[in-house]
Figure 1 (cartoon, helix red, strand yellow):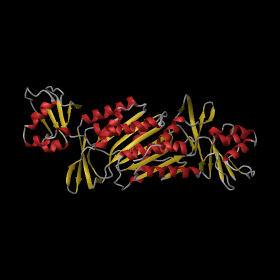
Figure 2 (cartoon, rainbow over the protein chains, first blue to last red; figure 1 turned 60 degrees about the vertical axis):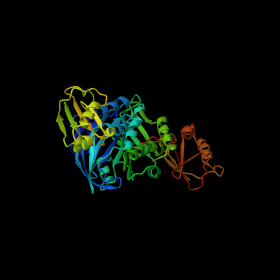
Figure 3 (cartoon, rainbow over the protein chains, first blue to last red; figure 1 turned 120 degrees about the horizontal axis):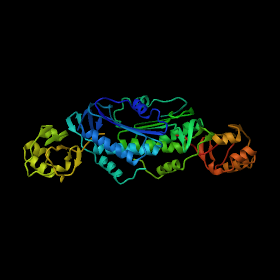
Length: 153
Length: 153
Length: 83
Length: 83
């Protein structure tokens, strides 16, 4: 499942909804991305996440489907927020559930790495010296590339 | 932080407590282990987790300290339950928080792999054909061994 | 054809979305980008370094040799920074 | 010396914990295991395959050549299966 929303999310409630009554699940991996109050050596007051409605949903659904092709997953969820967010606010949630932890952990890492380079979101940071668009990190592209040649399990 | 307890836990509350006001944190990785209703081709009605009080706490604290040596983490938490648990019940929670996702995700995987082979817990499953002690999985030992030669970051 | 601009491409060009009729000689994404560069200072500035411009046609990533058709939705944006 | 047994070692041996005085010739973990094997059918059965017996002394994993001292807390258990 994927959701693109302005609203916050509650990880406990999302896990409960995703896994209720599904007793073949042995492991749930998750990742939550938060707004940091620093970026490099600059203090960040807040940020605004812009996205491309329509393409965002399509890309997240494709990424999720790819994870299900690579690993045997019982359930998964991606929530990505947009709009103005402050330090400590949640940006993204990735949840994966599987019989065993290997598939849950690996697919969770895959989804967040892939989403960072494929999902059409852009961050505008508010800093003491004005607003600035966040530049893409080479490390994110490297992390995503790692999965291109790797097999799932 | 580590906790060994009979009681259930609430991941949302634990994340909130661990990360409140800590705005240098950019990523929180977590893993929850659940009781499955199947093991191989056998149906499992419930299980009882026995542990070695004293050594359990020592080992979990050592494992957590090792993760902090290997990765730059802002916070971490391991909760492991003991006693009788039914399918769908939570067994273990691993939480790691760091500035960037790489350290959070890798250390979360490290902690659960390491805990599976080092923390003195044993599972007694109730099956249709009687109780049986769960055998250690070779895959768990392999997963832990993988970290022995690897460097943190 | 519908054109969409996001992030600093949007702020430099000054518009988020426009409907245009392509000249007949503009047949692919590369030709579109060169044609847009000539539409004014904002476009020239936004599109001066094409190595940091990503293009999606009908909401899917494409390369610069991708052929365009009337009615396509073409989006230009910088490398993404979500997550 | 305090001896603790866990999981199926406990159920096969039939006791969880005991206090014993070691014979003077039992100086390390390996000698302790061989000595315990001779203490009855439950012990013999529980300790017949030492490849699946793990030993902790004073709550730390040790190998079979680990030297024992009076007052040690020695725990015997199968490979762990938590998590």
